[in-house]
Image 1 (spheres, helix red, strand yellow):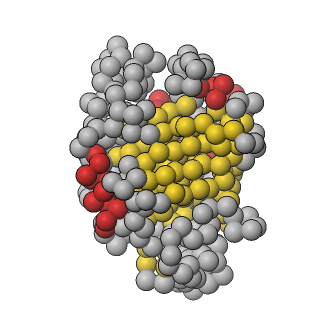
Image 2 (image 1 turned 90 degrees about the vertical axis):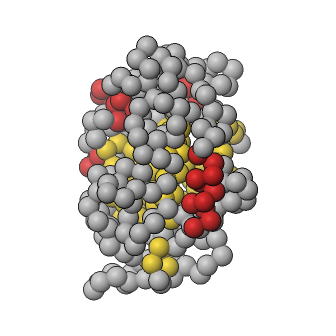
Length: 299
């Protein structure tokens, strides 16, 4: 079932709205009307039902999981979350996202929020040409090997043609993108599994093929490269993964113990060229207002 809630202004989106696809845990999913006219399930600017329990985000939008009392808090340890994602209409310089944040206060927060920030676990931030999964467990910026605001991440598509992935040295553009193994012209499944300490691994699947994407070994915030990770383009092509910062795991474990909130969002800005989709052709870029993402089969 679906619920509604208010959304404070934030850099990632202007909109406020809803809850989710289908249950990820045991609590009953209920309508939670918040304000007049908000008792019909999915509503609000940019968020709509797409049939069979799916949620569609159009333009700059954000949705989140709630129950009748407020945010639904999940302990993901030992659990697996799956969602079928369609980003065929999400251009470069925009991203459809699926993430968990601690929401330590009674209002929205993530690792970029100020004052007051929250642990953030990004299962994916994706468009037709690039996808990234990231763990953020502390404040700070720059390539310093910590899971700071830049985060410990894995990206396919930022250097889609010049940087090989782990799978046999193939370019990441051959693994993810239009016509790739994970062909973003069609829906594909994202599976995120969480260990008993809260550590995350992510797999991408389509047409019977599955590709390991993110895990504690492949993720990092490297300090290598010709500018030490601190230049305008993060993680230069020569930067090698260093693995998750060991200090991040106790933080994600504690955040799970307190409960994490599921957030779906779609947003965009010119800075995405730097950290998400640097090698995307200019003719494939567009403002977020043109973007449409669909999330289905959440379980």
